[in-house]
Image 1 (cartoon, one colour):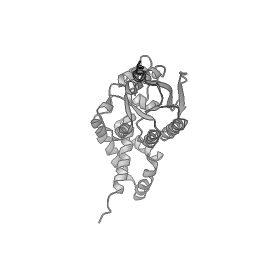
Image 2 (cartoon, rainbow, N blue to C red):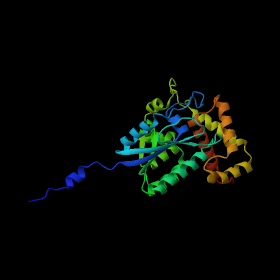
Image 3 (tube, rainbow, N blue to C red):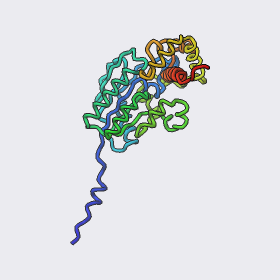
Image 4 (tube, rainbow, N blue to C red):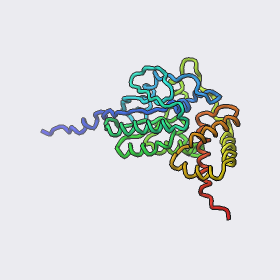
Length: 282
């Protein structure tokens, strides 16, 4: 008598449940949820109580059977909330260029990799300085995802509008999409509506005017020092960052929002490093 083939029963059993950890920058989530005030300020405090459920559902849509073990929440102020399966990582309020965030998030990813107890990580950030640790995690066998809003579904357009963010998204194994309205609903406190408008039309040209005026006012020694310093910093020196943000605020008539700040900093780096490649005048 032939024995029944048991391979069917093995193949029809559910896939094993994977384990994931999310590492989310509060400023980034506020931006993609469009919860900044019209003047670029941070607005009302974010509510994290419903965040686990939202992230869990988004991970399952993208990766299938996946259990969210924990969320690491990176913020520059203590919201006093106590949420299950969430860990608050406090960053210095003076971390305007995101360097402290990158260092802390990198250290946490490295610890997760060395621990070997998770299968996937979900990063909520647009900082392309995280590319190195993302690649290390991928080489260690983890599935690396980046949280994004619906703009990530139109990658060719995003590559033109925000190349640094697009580069980070392209390097991820998966782009976990959460619609901005859905995220805003989960994060916003009662009665706090998301801002309807994004950056003003033509803001890139306005900010480039600011950058060119700043560059023209620098001495030759200052320019040379920046050319040497920027490749190592992968950001802007704090004093340069403060100067540019103040100039941008004065020109725009308000504080710059999250996206405008990133564009301004990127333009300043591009102008500085591009001029270093120019041949000397004959």
